[in-house]
Each structure stands twice: as structure tokens, then as C-alpha cells.
Image 1 (cartoon, rainbow, N blue to C red):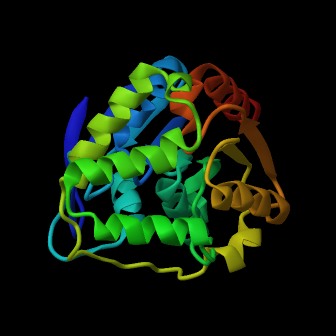
Image 2: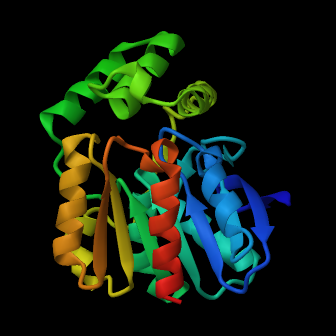
Length: 263
């Protein structure tokens, strides 16, 4: 079932499926939208109730006005469905939002999966800075799509090592989301440095990294593992920033094992 939910500053597209008593909320990466989770939704829906949402400014969700506060968006969705506690599966920018949400509203969270997590307070490497500068310099949509695909997914690998389904989906998501102009939108952050507070998270946490990802995200995964008392880390070989799209079989094994063990 697809429906739109309204928060103070957003129109939020949500897909709700599954029949289980436990609820899993999926939060996509900043280079994607809710389509990135299609394999996981299919595998979990017979055991769990699933909420899969597009963040405002991505996919079918819209930012209404000039400001957005993403943790408020998450809380609005949970309150709309009268959910008291959920598991969160999140990736990259979505994982940054999940971490902030867990620190601000810990009572809503049962457990979290953080895939290639970003986090506020992290000092970017020269590689990330150069990528951001390059993206800002490009005005052509096809060039920006190619830059993002090569930087986040292809990396230094042979094109043949990436399956065609992943490539096609990434190009479609990048085209749709990079076509949305959010340059005038202010992101309001209630926590400016989650890295300093990460030890306060006591929930069960599974961190998943791709071995071929940008070095920052591999380092963030290791830092979170060392700072969060109840964290585990899995690394998927021959995968980059979105390992669930490149090796869904292993990813889903890790995901189901974690969700089922910590019931």
C-alpha cells in the first residue's frame, strides 16, 4: 500500500507492506530512493511489517517550503501509524538520519542496521572533498550522474564486475533524484556532532560496509564498532557503497540473522 503522509515541511511517500508484528523502517541513501530496498522488502515481508519511505527531496516525496528536519519526518511517519518501537535499516545519509533519530528519540528504536553509515562530526577526507568540488562544478545532468555512479558504485573496478540490474537501477535513481533542485533548501540538524555522542547508543547495532567503498565510510564503520557497546560489523567483499545492491544474497543473510537474533 502506497500513501502520502504530511509533516510540517514535507509530503512523504510511504510504502507499507508485510504482516509481521515487528516493524522495520527502511531509510535509503542520499544517492538513491526507496527503490534501493526492493530485494530486502521482498525477503522480509513474510516475517515483518515493512515501512519503506522516500525522504523528502528524493523519489516521490517533496519538501514543502525552504527547510527540512529529517528526524521530525521519521517521527511523523511513526506517529501516523501509532508505532511505539521499530527496527531501522538505513544506508549512508539515511544512516546519518537514523543515528540522529536514535540519539534524540531512543524510545522509538529497538535495533538498527547501518549500511555504509555517514555521521555528523566526521571530518571528510580529501577524496570526498574533491568529489564534492567536482560535483559542484558540473552543470550537465548526464555528467553528474556519471560522476556519482563512478564515485560511489563503480570505483576502481572493471565495469563487468557490476551486474546490469544494479547499474540500471542506479542510473534511474540518480537521474530522478539529481533532477530535483534542492539547492535552496536548508537542512535543520538538531545534533551537529553525533560522533561525540555515539557511545550513548545502547541498542543492538549491525554495521555493514562494502570492502570497495570510499575509505571514509569504512573508517566510520570501524569507529562506530569501537564506540557503540552493542555493535557488530560485517564487511561484504567486492561491493562498494551500496552492498545490498551488489550482493543481495549475503546482505539479506546478515540482515535476517541480526533481526531474528535480536527479537
